[in-house]
Each structure stands twice: as structure tokens, then as C-alpha cells.
Image (cartoon, rainbow, N blue to C red; front, side, top):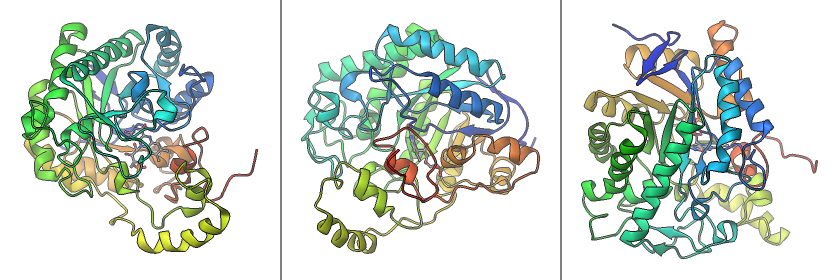
Length: 402
Ligand SMILES: Cc1cc2nc3c(=O)[nH]c(=O)nc-3n(C[C@H](O)[C@H](O)[C@H](O)COP(=O)(O)O)c2cc1C
């Protein structure tokens, strides 16, 4: 039977209101200890009221050395974080909307200036963007400790009332660093072959099962990226099959790593003005260097194409290979494409990030036939300025000082 965008659907006990999901989007709305705030609750309630079929939270750190360099990330590293998250899940559930927490360790895509401790990675290779620190290659004991922290965090998400958890295995963060031969040069049982590169994820699934039973554990992966020896779709298909064997509840198909620039969240042009004003790498450069660099950067940093539905082909290939639900994200911005993805391409869910920043009620607008296409202009100011401020749509305009 053909799927429909606006039908309820259940995966592993999670009842989605329709097949359009809010993809994980870092909100920068934690307090200075990493606890969720009322502002975050308000945002999720707006998304729930606005008709999202389900919500995936922005990434939350499982331990301090895995913290994001972006502004005010939530932490799920202690039991003290649970009560506020529980307040949030109760508020969202009041609208019948499921909410899934995304959990992450950033690995080498962070800065020791932020985490307060040396950064770590599968191999001691400097990230080209987060180039301040040389990461320390993890030992097997340290990898096992991180697996334990993922499992502890999964249990906390369950206790906090989240309907499921999503492992951040995409965009070049730690789990994605393990999956890619570009960042994982290990020759021990954690590297070289697909099975070995996948081992950290398979261990998280195995050990989590003993603790949380059949609680839904989803994952987001980058099915392709722009790096030499990076992940390619044929390898992602093999990873998807391993995920199915591990009991994964659903795979969200994304792409890219931070070193790729805006490969994950594509733009027509490079947002050089916010990059020069807000990115730690450029903001302290002398102003004459900035004015000189802006046009050059625009010229040399070619933006990846296409701008729309750029992970759909990968998602189709993955869906053909596995029997578990597949979610596709990336440049999906109108209801006609969503209907096509769900009805004709047999993909279980379409997810969006930036369209929900511009309009948290976009799904309601689609459903009521009031709007066909998102108002988001894909300027990516939200992502760049998110290094220093809470999530907001800037609509291609630099913020004032307030
Ligand atoms: C401001 C911002 C924050 C993001 N934060 C996250 C995040 O916390 N976790 C994640 O997996 N992806 C994150 N993403 C990526 C999105 O989930 C999504 O994969 C990407 O933006 C492409 O989808 P879109 O075209 O619908 O925006 C973020 C994107 C933006 C724009």
C-alpha cells in the first residue's frame, strides 16, 4: 500500500502524527551548566503545536569532552539533567507529538578551549576546520568508556520520557569519524574494515539493550561526504545493513562533515559576512584581512550542488537494502517533494531543519494547503551565528548588537 504524508504511523511503538519530522537542530538554549531551559521547552511546544509529525532535539553531549563548540549546548551527562528534560517531554506529549533526543560526542570537531580538556578522535589527525587542537587518538579502554557514557545517556533519555533516542552518527562527529576512513586510520579492531569501523556503534547497541530493553534507538548517518577516503553511498548501504542487524529503529540519511563546509546544509553562496563576524576562526582577524578575504573565499569555496533533495538518492538505495524505517533530510523544502518522497520513493519520513527554524508551524501550513514551499532562503546565517547565539532565523540579514 502506498504511504501518505499525512497519516499516523508507528515505528517501534513511537506514534508519529505524520511523516514530516523536525530534524535535529542545535538550539543553543541550555543554561551555562548545560541544563535545558524554558526557552527550549517553548520552542518544542511551538513545533508540536505547529504540526510536526515528530521532533528530534538538537544534539546533546554525553560527556564534557564531547561537547559542541556551538553556543549553549544541552548536556545529558548526569542524572541531574533528567527532571528538566522530563518537563519538556511532558509538555510536548500534551500535543500528542513524539520527541526523540539526539545524543552526541563531538570527537575532534570541537575545541579544547570549550571542553576544558584535550580533544579526542579515532586517530590523531587534525581537523581542517577545528585546527587549533591536535586530537589524541583514543585507546581501547577510552573507547569502552565512551560506549558506557553513550549507554548511560540512552538510559537517561528513556527516564526523561523521550520516545526514543537518536545517535548522532553523521556530519563528522565522533561516531561518524569512526565510520570514515578519512578520519579513522586505525589498524586495530576499531578500524580498517567496515565491521571494525562500525564496532563502536554495534557495541553501543549491544550494551544499551541490556539496560533499556527494546527502547527505540535510531541513528543519523552521513551517507556521503566530500572527503578523500570519506564515506560513499555503497559503503553507507553496508553500514545500514549492519545497523539493521543491530536492531536500529530507523536511519536518518544525511551527508557531509564539517571539513566539507556547507555540504550538509547547502547554500547558493557562502555566508561570508556572518562567517567573518561570528566564526571563531575568522572573527578576530584584522578588518583589512577580512575585506580582502571575503571575495576570495566566495570565489574559491565553491558551493556543493544540487541545493535540493541532495540525500534522496542515497536514502533510496539504503531503503532498498533494509527493512527498517528510513528518514531523509537535506534540502527538502516543499510539500510536493515530500509527497513524492513518501508516496513514490517509498521513504518512510522526510525531515527538515531550516524550514522549521523559519516557521515552526510549517507542517500545519502544508497540511491546510496554505503554503506549498518553505519561506527559508537557505542563507545559513542561523548555522553560522549559532556559534555565539541561540537559534534564530536571520533571513539573510546580519543581526544588530542587541
Ligand atoms: C542551525 C542548525 C543546527 C543544526 N544542528 C544539528 C544538530 O544538532 N544535529 C544534527 O544532526 N544536525 C544538525 N543540523 C543539520 C540538520 O539537521 C540537517 O541535516 C541539515 O540542515 C539539512 O537539512 P535542511 O536542508 O532541512 O536544513 C543543523 C542545521 C542547522 C541549520
